[in-house]
Structure formats: C-alpha cells, structure tokens
Image (cartoon, rainbow, N blue to C red):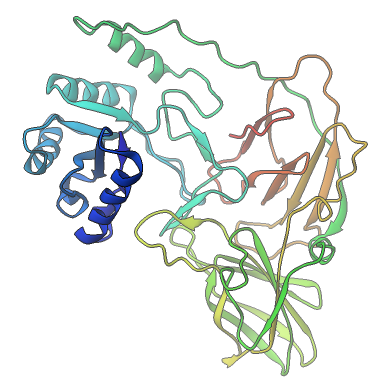
Length: 426
C-alpha cells in the first residue's frame, strides 16, 4: 500500500495535483500496488482522488461519532471497507503547553471495540512512541513540539511496555476466531543511574559561536531569513553596528526566539508565539556605535496547514520606531570544532545552555557551552538526562545533537533519555 499525500483535504482541493501524484506513483511502482489517501472525516471530498482508496483518521470517540466518521468515508469509498488509517491513542505535546490531556486506556479500548464491531480496520498512530532528535521537532501554529514524541503510545518512547499495551494485548487475545494471538510480552530495556556529571564552562554563548569554523556570513540591507542563507535549522547570528541611540528594540516578525546582546552583554529575549505568549520588544539602553547582536533560534518548523514557515529575524527590526539596516548574518554550524570535541574522552556531554530566570526572561551571564565527562563501567544501559538547574539548551552526546531541553517552559522536565553510546531520547 502506498499513500498519496497526507491529509491533503486540510490544505487544498486541487484534483489535478492529486491526479499527477497518482499517475506518477503508478508510473514508477506499477499497477499491483494499492493506493490510498488519508483525511479527517469532514475533509475526504478534497483529499480523495479516483484510483486511490479513501480512508479517514480519528482518535478516541463515542460510538455515534465513530459511526458518523465512517459514514463520511462511505460517501467516497464506493462500498469498500471501513478504514481508520490513523487511530490516535494519544497526542503530541507543545513547549509551554502544559501536560497533555491523553485518553484513558478504557477509552482507547472502547473505541477499538466499536470499530471492530463495525468490521472496520484501523492502524495506530503512534503504536510506538518516537523522539524528535536534534533540531527536528516540528511545531503547530501555537508553538513548538517538545523533544519527546511519546504520544501516549502503547509502547513508550524508550520501548517500555505500558498498561495500555497490556490491555490491548488482552483485548486481542479475547477476540473470537482470531488466528494470530498476541506473542509473549517483550521485556523492557534495562536503565541505569550514572549519577551526577560535573560540567565545566568552556565559552560563553557569543564566544562559542564566534569560534564557529568558517561561518557562512551574508551582508544585506535588511535581515535575511534562514531560508535565504540556506540554513534551515538551528541558530543564526545577526549583527550590526547601531547608527543612532535608542531604548526600544522591536522585532515584530521574529521567528522564533531571539537572544539580544549589546556589546556582547545580554539584554533580553524576543519571543514569537509560544502557546499564547509572545514578546516582540525589549527595553535597553543602546548608543550610536554599539554592536547589536541577536541570536535567533528556529524552535521547529510547522508541520501542518502551511509550508510558508520562514524563520529568522524577518523585516522589519526597529529601534525607537526607526528601521535598522545593514545587517551581517552568520549561520551557526554545530560541528566538532564549535563543540570543542576532545577525542581522549570516552564519553562527553556537551550542553549548549541558554540559562534564563524564566522561559522568556533575560539571558543570564553564564549562558554558554558546558562540557562534562564520565566513564561507563560494566554493561551499557539506557539512562535519563536531568538538566537540574539548567533552564534551556541543547544536549550533545559525543558530538551528536540529541535534542532540546527546556524545563523552565515545560512540561517536559526529565527531558532527555538516551541509550549510552547511541542516540536514544525521551
């Protein structure tokens, strides 16, 4: 089975586009495969195309709602089987969004039972939780998704067997005339506590970025986006010399997070939409000839509704209402040189930390690059990273970008889980 697009009915109703994709797939994969589309029940009309079987997606619902959803599918499936191709046992979580309101196990089982009694097929999304490694977390319009993509799945992100998994296993075992009973329950991975790791500060934030090997810098009148300088993820450093005094710095179109410095001294943080919070201006005391630096962070690209999700210090940036021009912007490459990798260490933990008193507050002077090391004795096992008093940053293991931690915004506090010498994250 090969899916055409994903929930395209939420975006547009261009049947020529869907026909092009259908024919292109047939050309390369042949006529033996089954094509299908997936859409929310009310959006099948625009998301479906002749020659591809239309399916729907939905999560936990009452019986009357499940019936209504499948009735919508029937209008386009021409008597074919009922299929929920994305059945949601949970949901993702946003930074600063609070703890997710996940369905109960009983609610999941009840919806499964309803679909089964209707002779419907369904596929879990997600059955095994996942991880947003590095800078690869997505975002909604409301804000960025956390590092964990556990999703409340029956198998947790780290591969653990949950009570929901056991309930589903029992449910399947009781199905009448079911030829494939569940296998034995898998064992959970071993986890170990390796204790506290002492970290040492190597550079402050600006010093570490200044050591970026052969940075790609671009000069322009107005600031350029991440896309314009071909740097889609991570951080970009914007810098200029001020031509006049000012006290109010405003970046109305910043995407997504900006750490502001005057002459390398922290001034504050600019914040785009972060679950109903934003701060597009800060007060400062800037003089003509001062060096203004804004480190802009891409918190995650939007995964739904729009592909027009430019990142960066988007025009215009103003000081007391006057547009700032003549910018130099440099992409930040988190490579070995920047991270000061020393090969004699068996195990290295790099923490590039932007410390704040609160998730949106003024950067503290001890923001920078920190490094710690410890040796593993005996059997290697999974473990947890707890950032302790570190408020926001990015965790690197052996030079690998594991993911963002941000306990000051939450709700993910015990943020990073990883298998030692691999890249496993919670």
